[in-house]
Structures are given as C-alpha cells and as structure tokens.
Length: 375
Image 1 (cartoon, rainbow, N blue to C red):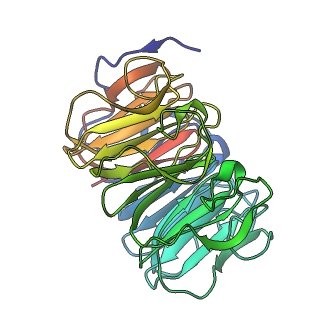
Image 2 (cartoon, helix red, strand yellow):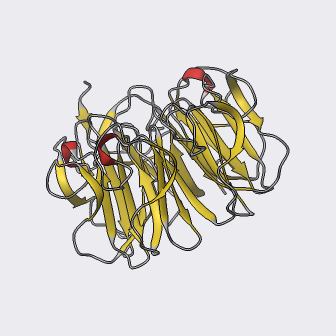
C-alpha cells in the first residue's frame, strides 16, 4: 500500500467548472461515461449536456436522472443492469426508454432500482438472490414494475439486496439476507426474499443507506439505526457483532444525513452528518478512509475535525467524498486509480479539497469511481 498522507493543498480542478455531470476514478467497463475505459484522476465532464439532477453508481455501471424526468445509464451491462433491453456495455450515457417521470434511483452491484413520480417502483438487472423484488430469480434487461403499489418513495441498493421506504414511512427489504442484512430478524444466508417484506411495524423511517452486507437508517425523530454485518466495527455499535434487526446507534436524536452507499467488503467504513453540520465516520480506517488522520479502525462514530459546515457524505470503496455548505468538494482515503479526484494516486487520511469549485451540490459513488453534479 502507498504511504497514507494528510491533506495539505488544493487540487488541480479548473475554476470555475462548467455546469454538468462529472466522473472520476477507475474507468473500467466505460463506467465514467467518457467514451473510453481510461481512468481519470480529476473530475471530467460527461458530454456537454446539462440538466442532470441525480446520480447513483453500481459495481461497474452508472445511473443518472435529468430534471426533465428522463433516466440514463452507462458502463458494464452483463446482467442487463443498464435497463436497455440488452447486455451490451456502453461507455457513454444511453437513455432508458422515453419516459419522463423517473424520480429516485439506486444501484446495487449489478442491479438497479428506481421510483417514478407516480409512486411506482421498478427494477432490472441481476436477480440471483431476488434483489429485484419480483417474486422470482429471473434477470431482466429492461425495467419491470415491482407489484402494483403507488406508494413508494425512496430506494437504496446493496450488493444483492434492496431497501425502499414508502410514503407512509414504512421500511421494506428484499434480496440476499447475508449477515441478517434484510433486518427481518433472521440471520440465515438461506432466508433470501424475492418480494418486499416490511422491516418491523414502524412508520417513521426517513433515510436508508446500504453497505455491502450492512444497512443504515435515520428515523424522523433523528435517531440512527444499523444492522447486518458488523466486522471492523462498521455498524458503529462499539463491537464487531452481526445483527439481524435494527439496533439504535447511541441515544442521540440529531442525525440528519447518511451515506447512500458503501462498496467495501472486509474494510468497510460509513459516514453520517448531524443537524449541527458535523461529520462522523466509523468502521475500517485501513486506507485512511475515515478522514481522521490515521489508519485506525473505530467501532463507534468519530468526528472528522471540528467543522460544522458538512452537507453531504458518500462512502465509497475504502474512501469517501463530501460536500460542504459552501459548495466545495472534499475527498480522502484509497486512491490507486485517482478515485479522490485530486489529479494523483496518493492516499490521504484527512480531507483534501478537490480543486476550488464552489458549485457542487450532489455526489455519489460506484465501486471504484465517483460522480458529481455541479450547479
């Protein structure tokens, strides 16, 4: 492993950047959408189109929506995860159908889930563990509706499982149950579910995010809940125990935002932001991915610095990026293919600013890459 260094200077990102969608990191399978499979160590604009609104990454593919309600995908497609009706990989964005009512998106390792503005839920791609929620184990290369309900709101996708929150605040899960990650109070690997099952009976779930075999959620009362695989302390509960039903992380009621996804396996970390704008990380610190200036594992949340201006956090594969309220973008951790966007392949164990732009408003990760949108 390369030497882990503390952040010391600004990156090479041009200022101001053009408005649009940007990607960086490992370019395998064309996942960066730049027309090639080359790696990029600095943010590179995907085409010249504007109007991008949301981004999500899978194991080797990317998904984005535009403000006009269209959905676009690119990258690897061996399981039909791009939703284009085939298994061809593409290195530039392709529109999925012609509809203009797509709303929320999430990518698993090789499957996609999305909601529409009418509250319907759709999925496609790999389905060997029932992660599409369609009641079978069949792969689909184009969107298929999950049931007939029109009450779906938010979605999150893990490696081979899926979570969704309905408009009534209930939480639902399906797919692989490795390490009890579905939160249904059974821990057997054989208890996979191919249709949505409600997690408990509560109606106050607000946000949900996924690790490889772990899950994280915030309720409307500001409490934080975790379950699934606990190795390296990734659940933040002060231990390395697996849990098959939600466990509250501490007693605080001021959690606000969590990372939508984490792609690490044996060295996973996770991050969340409180209502006071402070940033907290926990789990494996092997590559400096906790941003704490070291490579130590922590099994309970640790504050990253003392700033109160953090807005969004995204945990990737042994690294992380975050956006502050001033629109600046920061990164740290594992960086062999330029995943940190800093123009190099150096590892950093504390936050380092990505260029000087102050127009970043959202970001997300794939397994070995990141994407972000500027305004």
